[in-house]
Structures are given as C-alpha cells and as structure tokens.
Length: 282
Image (tube, rainbow, N blue to C red):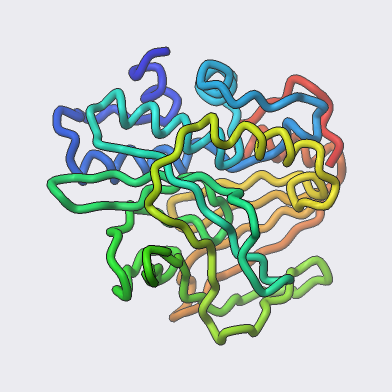
C-alpha cells in the first residue's frame, strides 16, 4: 500500500507537507470526485471484505468505488499516513420513511483534529447529502457549501447532522423522480452520532449483515453516485440522475434518464470510470 498510488487514484498532485486544513480539504475533494459511492459488488455476486488491503486493492488498484465502510476506511488510512490526528466514529442514519434514526449504528465517518479544532470528514454518504468540505464540529452553526447548508446540533453528547434542502428544477418531470418529502420543511436530517472512537472491526457484523439482509436499500437497489465539479451523478438501478447545484437561485437542476442494460454498462465506464469484472444485475 502506497500513498503515492492513492494520490494517483484520486488525481491529486499538490504538495502535502503539512497535515493542515487546506491539504485535508483538497485531498477530500479529489477523493469524492474520483471515488464513487457504490454498492455494485453486491449486485455482481462479489463479497465485500472489510480489511484494508482488500479495500485498497478494490478502490485504488481496480479503480472501483465502495460504500461508506470502504470509502471512509481508505480515507482514514490515507489521513493517518499523512500525519493527521484522525479517528473513526459510528452513526445512526435517518430513515425518512420511518421518521426516525436506525436503532443500530449503520454508518462510519471520521473526526479529524487540527490545531485543537475538530472537523467531521465523511466521504461515504454519497448522493445529494454528501458534503464537499470538512465540516467544523460546532453546534448550531450554519456551514454553507456548494451542495447546500449543513449543520450540526448537539444534545447531551449526541450530535445530529442535517442539511437545508434546495428546490429541484426538473425540465421534463418523469415517474421515476423520487418525491421530496415535505417533512420538517426544507431541513433534511442525515444522521446522529457520538464522539466515541470506533475501530473498523466494530463494523464487521454490519458489513456482513448489509450484504444478506433483504430489507435494506443497498440490497434492493444497485447504486452508484459520484460528486462532480458542479453537482453530482447518480445511477440507481436503470435510472441516471444528473444534478447541477444552484442552477438558479436556491434551485438545483435535475435531469433524469432511464437506461437500457447496455447503456448501464457504458454509463458506468464513461461517467463513473468503472469497469466491472462480473456481470451487474441492476
């Protein structure tokens, strides 16, 4: 495992002498714009191993993406190698359908401390709730970024992460568009977490469970999302969604296309730079 090879994978070639916020932000942005959030292994009959060597080989050498457990674990390793004070945290994601947070921890994120300030660094949420920069861990402060305004709220040692949503402009509305739930106005809850440090082994059971449990979204749908320079790409099943942030004031432009089986493979190669070894069943 080689940090220069990782830098090659994320197309990062700037100096990184200091473990400072500027370098962290640049590395993070390269990471989310080159490594897709994807669960395609599950839909290709491939097992997902949670050891670092397997994750490194898959994402860096085979130029694949991964889900939060893989993407953030790889980023954790890279930041450690670069001398950052970084630790793994666990979160309970919010389920809009159930109007509550999951009972079990089902997400991994990172906390980085730089000169006494704590930042949350999470490259593994994907889609429209992916932050583009490290977020300062501070309660009640709006932190505007290109994807929208993010915010943490702390209550008795539990931190809540949320985003202020923007409206969507869809030139040709189609049935495949996911309806925006009007709950809580334009605030979308994302997850809650505590600052208890975790180890990747704490997530082995979750990693195994998500691959076999029929009722979780990752088993039900093949997902591949990637942040771009002005928005995001998302391929869910046969539906390709392209989003351009702030196309108009407080409004994101959304284009939705339904693909054929052949186009799915071509789209993965052309837009996400992914070539699969095994046959994908979307």
